[in-house]
Length: 134
Image 1 (cartoon, rainbow, N blue to C red):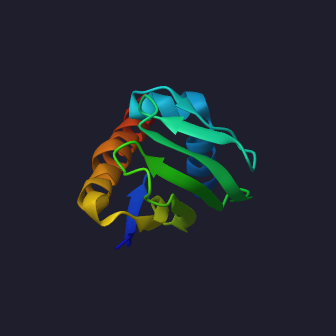
Image 2: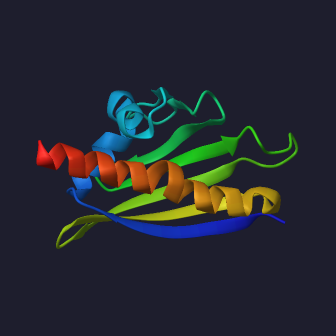
C-alpha cells in the first residue's frame, strides 16, 4: 500500500531563492551533481539522476509552492505516480522546505525517505554554505 513521506529541512537561504534554485536546471544540477531537466512552467517535464527520477510540474505558486508528479525507475510499472509537494517557508536563519511525498510505494518508502536527506538536503545545504563562504 502506498505511503506518504513527510519531511522538513532548514537551509541557509531565503525561501524565494530555494524555490528558484529547485526549478533552475543548472543550479539544481550544481548541488545534486547530476544533470536535471526542469523548468518553472506547469506541464514541464522533470528528469533527474540519469532518468531514475521523472515526472512533470503540476502546479506552481511562485516563490512558495512546487507540485510535481514524481516517479522512480525503481518502482513497478503498475505503481501509481507519486505527487510531490514542496512548500518554502521563511525562518530566522533562512528557510524551511516542507515536503509531502504522497503515494510512494511501500517497497521504496525507506529508500525515498533516506534519499531526500542523502541526495537533496545534505548536498543542497553544503552547496549553499560553500557559496556563502565565497
